[in-house]
Length: 127
Image 1: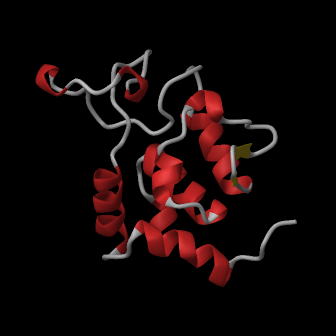
Image 2: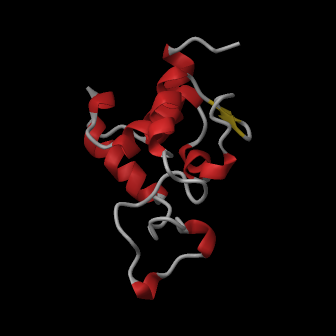
């Protein structure tokens, strides 16, 4: 099952995209400090129970920086902008291209756009 993927980062990303219906690019642009975890929202993105639990685990111990991080630190020659680096780990923001690739591999070829759109087809709209 897709939600049982071993990486907490991917599970949180996919659940957040699905539950919010927000474009993956907007979700990937979130920073830890943008989140209002008790209210389950950040800017114009709101989410449900599944994402709330996963996001709490994902941000544990971090106060700032990109919400979704790449698996490793960038090479010195490819230093990203300071806003795209986590001050605690030194890792960069997860790219849309990498996130899309990981989702396609795990889902058998579906896209993050299809995942966001599936919320409107299969889940009731929250009040």
